[in-house]
Amino acid sequence: MSPPVFRKIFIANRGEIACRAVRPCRELGIRSVVGYSDCDELSLHVKLADEAVRLGPSPASMSYLDIDAVLRAARDSGCDAVFPGYGFLAENPDFAEAVEREGMVFIGPPARVMRILGDKIAARRALSASGVPVTPGLEDVENAEQIVAFGKRVGWPLIIKATAGGGGKGMRKVSSPHEVEEGLQAARSVAEKAFGKASVYVEKFIEGARHIEFQFLADRHGNVIHLGERECSIQRQHQKLVEEAPSSLLTPEVRKRMGAVVVRAMKEVGYETAGTLEFLVDRKGKFFALEVNTRIQVEHTVTEMISGFDIIRKMFKIAGGERLSLTQGDVLLRGHAIQCRINAEDPKHGFAPSFGRITFLRQISGPFVRTESGIYQGWQVPPYYDSLLSKICAVGKDRDTAIERMRRALREFEIWGVKTTVRLLKEILSHPDFVSGDIHTGFIEENIAHLTEYEDLEEEIFKVAKFVAEVSALGGNVHGA
Image 1 (cartoon, one colour):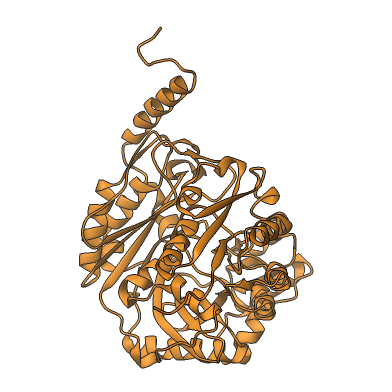
Image 2: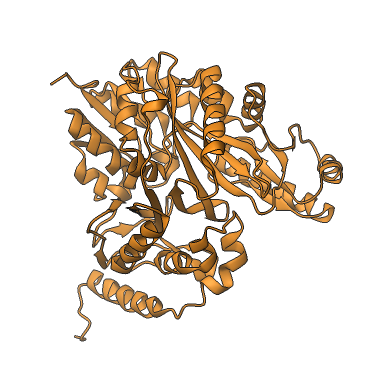
C-alpha cells in the first residue's frame, strides 16, 4: 500500500460536508481534524473526526470565519493540509495564502486563480478571453442611470449581482426602469453584509433558462478533464434545491462541445483541483457562462454516482502532487442520479429558517440511495449557519427510475422538531413538468402556490415535538406533575 498523501488534514468546515470529508481521510489512512464552535460541540462532524478543536463562540465570524483561529487550530494539531469544503473560507484567497505561509497545503486552487475567478467581473473577462460565451453584461456599475440605459439597449428583465461571493446572495431581478433604484440599493446592501464588498454588476436575465454546470478536475501538471454536467434548475431564491446528472436537455453533441469549452478555459487560467463552471442555457440551446465555483459543490454527489469518482478523494491526491491518471476518453458516465436537499426551512412561509431540537429522525436506506448528513436524533439545529441538514441521492438506469427511487427515499425520510423541505420535495418530484423534464430556473417561483397546497400535518407533529422537547428540557413530563 502506498503511503498517504498527507499525514493529517484539517477540515475547516462543519455539518454534512465535514462529515463527508472525514470518510476519504479514513480510506487513505489520513487522520482528520475538525474545528467547532460552541454550539457545535456535540455536532456529528465532531463525533466522526479523529480529533476536534474548539474555534470560538457560535457566530461564524468568531469561529469558522476567523482565519487566525482556524490556522491556529490546524497548526497546533499538527496538520499538514487544510480542506475548506464549501462556504465559510472555501473561496477566500487570503485564507489560501495564509495556509501556505504556515507551511501547510491548501486543498484547493491557487490564490491567484481564486482572485481571478472569485471576482465575477474578472471571471467574465477571463472566460470570455478563453472563448467561453458570457451573457450580455454591464461590468462597471456606478449608478442606476447606467443600468436603465443598459436595460433599454439589451431588453428587460435584468439581474443585479454582487461581484464577490456566491450562493445567490446579493442578487436582485429588475423587470423595468422603475425597479432599478430599489434593486440596486438592496443588492449593494446584501453584498456589503455578506461579502464585505458592495460592488455589483448587471447581466441580461435569460427568461426560461436552464441552470447547467460542468464538474471538472485539474492537476498541478496541466491536465484537465470534465466529469459531465449537472442540472440545477430547481432552485428557490437563487439557491439550488434539486440537482441531477446528467441534464435531460443536453444532446451528446452539445455536451461534448460544452465540455471542451470548460477544459480549454480551465487549462488557460491555470486551474488546479476540483471546480465547477456554471452555465445558463436558453430556450434556443445557446449557453452562457455564469461563474466558476473554485471549491467542491454541495451537489458533487450526483456526479460521483454516475461517474464512479470520489471527487474529494481526488482533491486530496491532486493537492499531494499526484497526476490525473485518466484522460477524457476514460470518463464513462452511467445512469441518472438525483439529489434533494433537506433544509431546515418552512416552504409555506417564504422558506423561513427553522431551528430547534430534532426529536425524531429516520434517515433513508436501501438500494441505490445515499445520504450525506450532518445530523442525528436529539441534535440541536443552531440558528447561526446555513439551513442544509442532509442530502438524499438516488441513482437509476435512467431518469424515470431515479425519480421513482427518490420518491421512495423521501417517503422513508422522517424528521420531527424542525420544519424542513421534505414535503415540498415530494410535491416537486410528482409535478408533471418535473417528471417530463420541462423545467427552468423559475419553476419553483411559478409553482410555489400549488407546490405548498399540501395539508400541513407536519405542523401538528412539529408543535407536539416542540412541546415534548420543551417539557423534557425543563425536567418535567407530558402527563403533568
